Length: 220
Image (cartoon, rainbow, N blue to C red; front, side):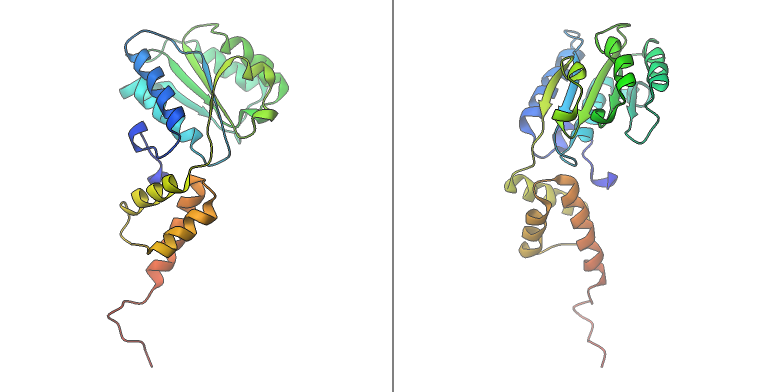
């Protein structure tokens, strides 16, 4: 799955408004004009939130991406004690040429209440060395205290045209091909969700590799 994930804004299909705004933010940071406020990306699972956050981090941090970008995933320890440790570590000066550190909390709606209490002051700029970026699948479940401290970018399922474009680009990176009917089936079943489309594409790839060679005569 990771082999098909876009690494830059140029590779992202769809989400034009979110990409446009993130490009403006990253360009302003690189010119030294702004330190952006905390960011929040909201949208259904699989629509590209993590992809866009990583692309933003690469644009801003450049060669310091691996040193100054951290992800805190939903399955990791996100207790108040651990969040406080992350905040303390984030107050260190960023590595070499990085303008600041970027810490990404995925599925932020599942953060425990005491962890939210620990995170709020840091998101208000206390310390000044870190940009906090949150993602959530369900905006209504996210703490209003966190929501109010962020600039919101909303992601939606992709259009049919964008989904066809996404599948076409993915196929260019493989050694197999699909006919129009198979592509249309993936588009319909994935419901505008890129992650689901790639999963279905990989299923089709497995079936494609099991197809008999057209030049091979069937056994009797």
